[in-house]
Amino acid sequence: MAKINKTYLLMIIPALVVFFSFHTLPLLQGIFYSLTDYRGYGTWDFVGFKNYFNVFQDGRALNAYGFTFKFAIVSTIIVNIISILIAMGLNAKIKFRKSLRAIYFLPYILSLLIIGYIFKFMFTHLLPQLGRTLDWDFLSTNILGNPDLAWVGVVIVAVWQAAAFNTLLYLAGLATVDEQIYEAANIDGAGSWTKFWKITFPMIAPFFTINMVVAMKNFLMVFDQIVALTNGGPGHVTESISLLIFSSGFGGEFAYQSANAVIFFIVVVAISIFQLRLLERREEQ
Image 1 (spheres, helix red, strand yellow):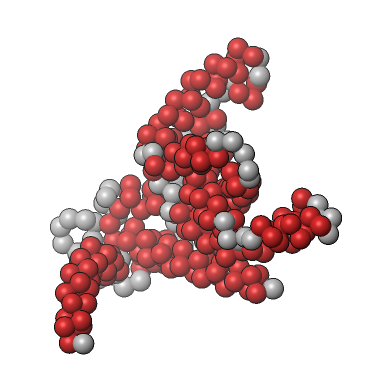
Image 2 (cartoon, rainbow, N blue to C red; image 1 turned 120 degrees about the vertical axis):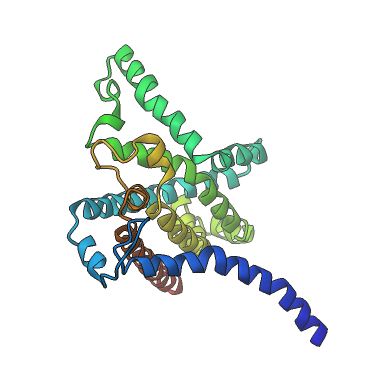
């Protein structure tokens, strides 16, 4: 027993040291500096919770929170609807099913920045040229340069890339549904919608919960897609919280953006816990 415990300790301690050094320690340092006026260099003084109060009075930060929440909510809903539909299609008895599954998963293994730059070229050059050729006004302009539509372009790219992982989870959920249940439903004359709503969806409810929580958390932390597509513009209309913290934090507002990061961390954790509680209650019903 003693040998086993030592073995476990030898395996766990290095992992704990690495985790503490690269995760917990920077987190504690960030919380510490959020209580100072540190600019990322030079001397500093304690300012208490002044940085935290200032975040709630900062129009640019509040706009970034508004955009991030709008983007995350819309993207989470759309990606889950699309992922369920794709997963059900790929789970059906069709030809080249395995090949199609591999093709649909490709977006997830590509670099977010590369995907973003490719879509930026499409939104900036290809689609406007196509729109002018076909005389379609809604395609003839670059939506990334439109303050009212730029966020739509970010949503399209984020959903296209994220759907692969969510589809994979839904496929895992669909594999757990017993075919005999569908056969019994067919004998009872159940239609396609009834089978989905009464059988499929309740059976994959735990996977729906995981997908909703993971998708919302990932979309709240959106960064790469925005850097590649708009870099927060036009103006600051597509500036997410993560981008604001990064760009301003290393631009002389280290302590202030550290406070912003702590607030954002608490918000993400609170939303994740709320989602889990709400969706788990839904599963029990």
